Image (tube, rainbow, N blue to C red):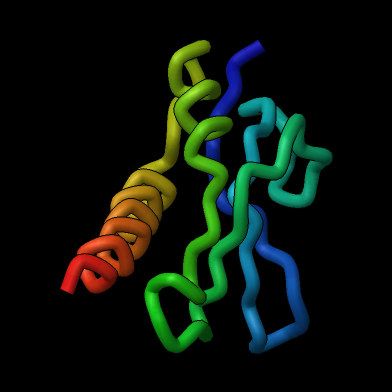
Length: 92
């Protein structure tokens, strides 16, 4: 069973909202995921509002051999930056 981490589109027409899911590679775009790892709202105002990701579960799936799509990898980096930014602001 080859597992990939990719985006799954939900939401209304012209109001896209995505889930970050761990899913079998052979499943279709609307197939049932193994696990929902987070969400991505492209309409969000701040990076913190745009990407919500369970880093612990994301790292777990990568360790067991799941491949993340290019888009999900870039969103994971964005989520990491958004998490680090409030901590830096709190020090000031």
